[in-house]
Image (tube, rainbow, N blue to C red; front, side, top):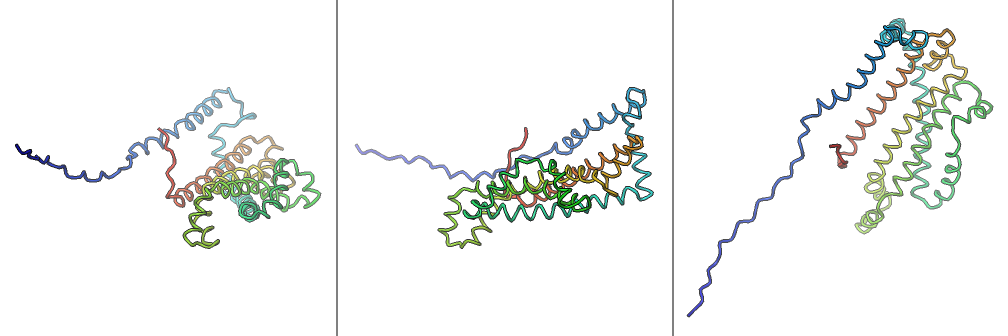
Amino acid sequence: MTDTLVEKPTRAPAAPVAVRRPVRRHRPARRWRRVVTPVGLLLIWQVASQTGLLPPEKLSAPSAVAQTGWRLARDGTLGVHLLDSLTRAGIGLAIGGTLALVLGATAGLLRLGDDLVDPPVQMARMLPHLGLVPLLIIWVGIGESLKITLVALGAFFPIYFNTYAGIRDIDERLVEAARSCGLNQLARIRHVVLPGALPSLFLGLRLALGAAWLSLVVGEQVNAQTGIGFLMMEAREFSQTDVVLLGLLVYALLGLLSDLALRVAERRTLTWRRGLQAV
């Protein structure tokens, strides 16, 4: 008796299933949901002001702040002060950010730079830079240099430390792989170090923007003749709480807009990164 081999029908290999990204259908609803709390707080604030729970000499109503802002915008006062504040913030951020990038990259890439640059920066970061105002007044005076120096100091440390940490956190195996592929030092920095350090660098920039606006608020309250901080200090002399609140609102909007612009730039630059999405 001969055994007969019965061949089983073989299945065709399954076609690869394309991985689809989840469609975010609720993004518009989520955006509107994020507006609910701020609008609700404004309504509560307005009602409390109209009913007398919040006296206007202590806290003006949102409608009064909006009317004051419209009046100052129409006569050009707000634009002049806003332009001066933006100029100081831009110059200080450029100076402090450039210096932090150069020193952070030097300390992160070179052992000699790490030995010479990082120790004094680590010591200086323990000092609150706003506490240096009396010493800075002696060094640079009370003019524009003081305000720009404060902004530069505020922007320096977040960018320096995030640049340094971003470079040092790169997986060394990636650098070795690039070296094995024949990439020279400049090519390794361009194709491995820079992409690996960019997320930390963007985080440092966002923190630096917040520190820069905070430093500007303090700097413009020291013998300034223009700027949003000067506008607030002048209003304080006459108990104009609506102008003071308007200045705070302008600072908040500037911070939000600059952070939003940076987040958009980060999203477009780091298209290869897939972070964890909230449920």
